[in-house]
Image 1: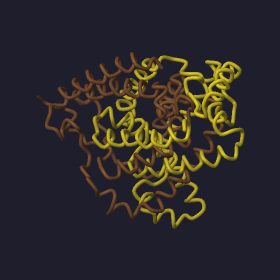
Image 2: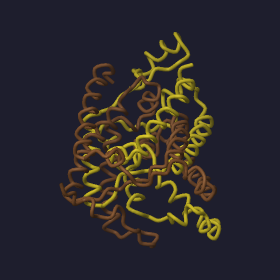
Image 3: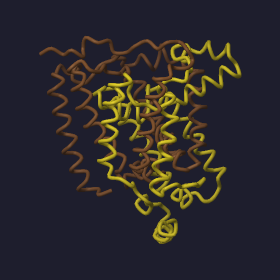
Length: 190
Length: 197
């Protein structure tokens, strides 16, 4: 499996410093089947749970729980947690289960990765897990800040908001891809 | 034409208990399992697929998202028209949407997973998602620390509240949904022709 991915990569690396994502494994299922499945899942969450799919608030709940543990009074005084007190909500359970759902899909499809570094990252930045941890942590930090400011993430705005024809969601998702492309291209191809 | 869904309030006040009721959590678990399963099968738990989209090399992410939007939109607006579901709109705040979206995108490129796909990636055994998840918790905290200062500033720039595009443009929702569905479907066929993956 990894031998298959490494062989064309070493050729590409020798020819140019940039990496090509298409040299690595793609999706197991058709993106149209998966996309339609997520669309139907949205009908179900709207109908049965009166909720739209979203992921980023899960991390804010966890931040709030840590805050309540370390500095309860200060945490309660913050405007964000006043408006949205941390709780094990429907959305919290949803994201925890998303982890398990990902595991079931990977294990049943023979795609369980069990790795600390994605192959494509390694081809570009080498074998340092510390570097990956630092950049990944920084990326996560920036992303959560942006998601809270915008009011949602790739799921909450990118799928749930856009499908409700929310203008703010369309603006957010377009800006998200502009920002992502502007950083990823120099990071991986120059 | 009557629109029964419009008569319903858009959101319900959350109870204050720190843990939601068990049946509610159970449906969250059930739908979350399906979501994680679909994300992983769709390849969007994979670092190279997600970064590949930002490099404009692999269009799997766009195909998944646009298909979900077309299918989800048709169903949700149909259910809403018959009064079966409420809409769950986030406020449109153009300044916060633009700045937040750009920052989010930059962070997404650095990590290679977004908040939902990081969860699926972790399940798939891509342990580096944990670094990003720790960062997501930290970033949520940083935002909460500063949240009071955004209320009167960035969050006020271009604040339209909870609206939909058809309402804003005074087009009937059914007509608008049909037009968007056709345009996105044509776009998906074109995308598939130019980018087979």
